[in-house]
Image 1 (cartoon, rainbow, N blue to C red):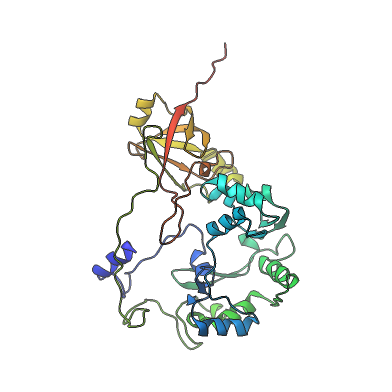
Image 2: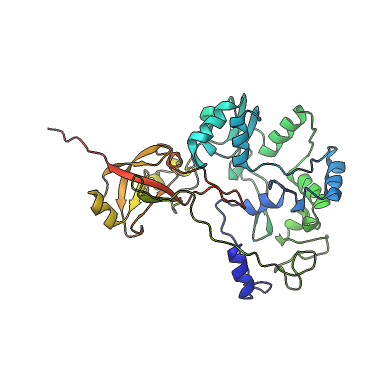
Length: 378
C-alpha cells in the first residue's frame, strides 16, 4: 500500500512503462490470484459479499455461494489445530517446510483425520499424508501462464507421467465428493472463466494461439489492455485513493537472550522448498547445504569463523548449520533460506502476521547463535 501511495503521489501510473509490478515468488501467482483463491473474492476479484455476484456464480455452478469470506492458508492450519477441519487437500505446496512456525504447522497436519497431498516429489508435507497423489511437472501441463496481467499459452512437452493432468484429478475428486465437474480440456475451463469473469470475457484458447492478451479484455473483439488506469481507476467514483498507514514494528524484537534478527528468503540457485533444484547435480555443487549468513563484526564477537558449525536458536526451536561470514549481512542481522530439507529454517520463524494482509512475518524474528565445539580426532 505504501508503494501504491508513492506511485500515485509521483504520478507513476496510467502511462506506458510506469506502474507497479510485483516480482512474484512463483511463476503464476498473478494468474492464480485472478481466479478465486483470495478469501473475500470469487474469480476476477468479484466480491463474495456482492449478492449479484454470488447469484451469478451460484447459477453457473449449481451451488449456493456463502457470503462469508473464506480462510487464508495459514488460517486453515489454525482451524486444523482447533479440530474444525477434519480433512485437507494440499496441491503443489509444502507448508511443513515453507510455512512459518513449523511447530504449529506440524500440529495442524497431525490433527486432521485425513490429509491428501498431490506433488511431483516427496516433501516434508508428504510425511504427514494419508494419501499421496502424483502431480504433474511444468513439462506435462497445458494451460496458461499470467504475469503482468498477460495471458499466454503454456504447452505440454510430454503427457503426464502419472496418466492424468492435475485438473483432471481435481475434476474426479470433485465429482466423487458430490460436485460434478466435467471438462474435455483446459480450453473448456478457459471458456467458463470467460463466461463468468468480465476482465477475461474476450479471452479464449483460439485467440491465445495467435498472441498473448492482457486483461481487461471484455469481449472477443477487444485487443486487451496494455496499460491500466489511463483514464479512471477501478473504484466507484473512478478516482484513486491514498491509504494512510502507520508504521508497525516487528512482532518480535531482539533482547539479551536472542540478540540477533533473523531474515529469511531465497537465493538465486534454489527454488522454494528445493524439492526440484536440490536434485540438480550442478546446483547442488554450487549450493549444497544451508548456511547462516552473518556479518564479520558479529562473527568476530561470537568467536565464529567461516564454515564453523553453529546452532541457531529462537523461542520456538533450533537449527544446526554452517556459517557464511559475509559483508552482505549488516551487523545485528543474519540471513537464512528455507530451501534445504535437512535444515528447516522455519522451525525458527514466528507466528506473527501482518494485521491487514495476514502475511506471516518471515523477515524478522529474534535468534541467538552458539558455536558448536567440534571434536578434533587424535
